[in-house]
Amino acid sequence: MNEVKPIETSVKAEEFNPLDQKIQGCPYPYYTAMRNECPVFQSPQTGMYYVTKYDDIRDIKRQPDIFSSNMLTNDRTGIRPATIRAGEILKTYGWEHVQVLQRTDPPEHNRWRQYIDRTFTARRVRELKPYIDEQVHSLVDNWIDQGECEFVHDYCIPLPCKVIADQLGLPSDQYLKLKEWSDAFLEPGGMMCSDERIVECAWTEVEAQHFFYDVFEDRRKNPRDDIMSSLVNTVIEGEDPLSMHELQNLMHQLITGGNETTTSAISHAVWNLIKNPDQMAKLWANPELVDNFVEEALRFETPILGLFRQVTKDTQIRDVKIPEGSTVFMAYGAANRDEEKFDDSEELIVDRKNAGAQIAFGAGAHFCPGAMLARQELRSTFDLMIERMEDIQLARPLGELTHDPSIFLHQLTELPIKFKKR
Image (cartoon, rainbow, N blue to C red):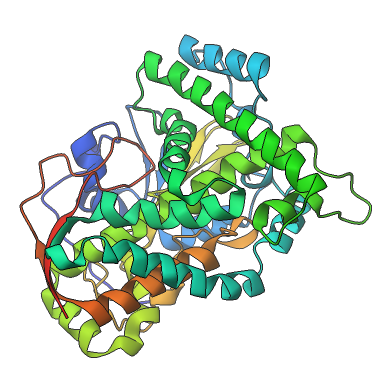
């Protein structure tokens, strides 16, 4: 472990407010203060315990019996009426939420993982590479002659949405519908929604569920060589086939995991290269660094700021006692800048030696099953950009609120860029 001195910051940990949209956009000074002052910090606004050190989060991942992924064990007292109404809408008109895959703990989690691991195989991702490269070039062709674009909406949203839409049975030219559904699935969990928006999201989810019901039934009868067919028709020895209820909730996770994180990762990677022109120049001069840069980009600006765990019994992290029923927030964005794990942790370094140690995709049993696909989309993006673009800059300054509101998602609202065509 590195011997490091605490980094001085202009903020104090106690000033951190996860519900402040400006802080959501740039929480890193507060994360540094927490690591220095109180590595386990209880937010007075939400009551959640923020865990900010790399090794502590790895320890949490090893103890699913204490830190459970099943958040439905939470005390529901005080739950918002709009959230109750949303659950009633799903139960009455669609399929209510049940715990599958990322919301379960071992050994139950193992069943779901078998289905997903047989679906998201390395072979399938390798076979998708030519298709991903084609999509990358096609999107860039739309605006490269103009010398500028709004990169989030012209590229970062369409790319992963088109790729996952094609695999899930939605025509790629309707990718914005997939984005609409994904946003509706995720926004209520970000704790920044109005009551009206929570209910609206439930109705949008019902729409998505009925669409996928028809796709599930079609793939049972007419299987294709895609993720959806594999998921519907895979049979694990000794296990019952996946029910419609289970399939719907797996689809909820695949849609959100398949596009939101990749959109964030690509847009932030470009934004941070623009802010570090020396590192952009090094990457453009050494294209063989793309794979390593992908890992460093994920470390430096983690697509998901963190995820939640439910404490099943009284426990303690460092010197902080955490009572049963509490919610712990594993702050990946803080852990990936832990000074004890990464030298010069607040610097973007495209040839960083241990960039691959980042935990943007989680770790252990719940390691993101779509990580290979996301990495390929990132690699294809930067291979193309190095080949076809140079001198990338912001076309205009960003606004004060740079990110969409959420306590755990981390998505740039926009990224207007200008560049020279190579």
